[in-house]
Amino acid sequence: MQKHVFRLDKPFELEAGGRLERLELVYHTSPREYRPGEKVVWICHALTGNSNPMDWWPGMVGPGLIFDTDKYYVVCVSMIGSPYGLTCPVSTNPATGKPYLLDFPKYTVRDIVRAIILVREYLGIDTIDLLIGPSIGGFQALEWVIMEPDRIRKAIFLATSVRATPFLTAFNESQRMALLADQTFVAAESPEGGRAGLACARSIALISYRCYQGYNGTQYELEEDTLFADRAASYQRYQGKKLLDRSFDAYSYWYLTYALDSMNIGRGRGGIGNALKQIQARCLVVGVDSDVIFPPAQARETAEVLHHAEYREISSHFGHDGFLVEADQLTAILQPFLTAEN
Image (cartoon, rainbow, N blue to C red; front, side, top):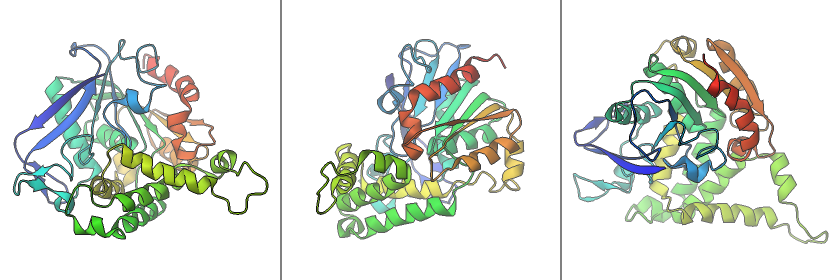
């Protein structure tokens, strides 16, 4: 996919009351100019993903795959606050000439979607044929079909929810506590602050992304006479280091967890039921049978309230992360929905 940068050289007001004096967003598209009238597939990425879904969804996006970048005009925009998207806590605060760090304003899922809509307008795309988002990407997709109901024909909400649950927020707060326990994060003297805290936070998050069967199926000790089990511990340390090696920073992670906690499509709309009734798109809700943070029962309830909605489920031993792993199952579920005429 082809990389671009969108720039807004005027203040961007945020739902929580703050503002960004300017906004820069990285986005990726199919490697050509948009041709008015061609079918558009818009992908909203997950928490630590980026705007190139071929990086993090290699079995789903690319030539010859279900989201074929030759057949469709595929677009994905980095979220506000993502370190891969330019405007984030480690970017330069124009008021001080230094990185924002803990002075970055809090933002919500709605702010993320409002910024993405600016890119849609800039590209001259009036209609999105398919909008899809997994996890916090699903949060974005749900907000978007309510904010612009007449622009989106079909939407897929994958391993997600209409509102942040107390269980999700508990995991988020535990991760923030891990960051606060790292004094280099609290000092906020450098974008490199909080690396130990971030590795710990990522380890906590990974437990919520996986499940009992997944850990027990892959992390049992290989030696029968092991004195102290360490294989799963080593895996947790590896996953924390892996995020650091991807140039993710603790400050961006901190604010992204608050964005997760902001999710509530019913806020200011008369409740969740009233908000869902505003959706005009044909919808598909997909759950993962082993997902502990967005369990299938929750997804089924969402599908029951939506008009013109279907529910499907994938089976995986990888919990919430099943949407990243089970490409064959997902393709089989999504293909008929994608290609159906109505």
